[in-house]
Length: 363
Image 1: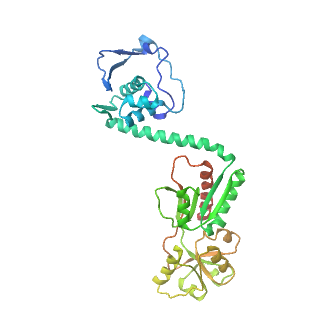
Image 2: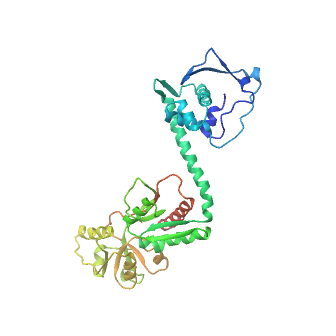
Image 3: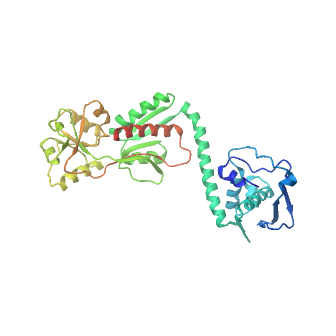
């Protein structure tokens, strides 16, 4: 039965016998040099007839993308019996048994061990089943993505992000996406990092973009980067002439700190403490937008990442300078989505748009 295992591995064809199966496969009571395999109450010894007796067997014709043999193997393993698998799949147990025998004959190894209480995969069977289950899962994902092609004609994708990114990166990516997919609605919702995670897990958002998001087994990280905080100032600020700014120089100007409800507060405050610099910020706020407006309209200094001021930087409203002698602790920007089979194609394409914007900024 040359080529049987190839059909299983690439999942293109059904297992089929020639038109006149009795000419090519003969069931006998005894055949020399052939192994005997047991399944349930059936015992078969199978040999392939000599091609000189039957002529060349016709080439198998493609009938479906997903071979039913994969389902047979998976269900036999789950049910623990051929009879149980047949009942679940509404297939005659003898038909399932026949396919398994032919596959075992080609592999040269038994795939299931016969026990008093049913069938159990052999080591070879376990290896094959791992491949089968991966293939079935991937095929279901492909089916879902093909179905999702229809959703590109309508639907909505929801981005959950923090305020600073909503008006910059998220809006830039959304505008580009809508230019290519005008029938898809985009909603951008600004919220805290904790709220981003909750919205994704609950299904209230499709894509999340935020800083220092906690890891979750329910979320898939699509992109992340350590985005160091730096001094954000107006382009005409006295310190803007410097390529990088010593931390101590910042104390000569009004400082803008995030309030204690934001993780950013601890990052900035701890850096000053470690440097032995005592400071009292002139402004405290939980709004990144407010920080940017204050920095743009005065000599004040905010401590943000380049990604926070993407739009203002492009319009030359604000600029960014690294801190020369101190390094702020990690400030990781992550793009995440729900971890599940069959993601919406629209949300995946939007995520790719966002990654394109992020990549251009970080390059």
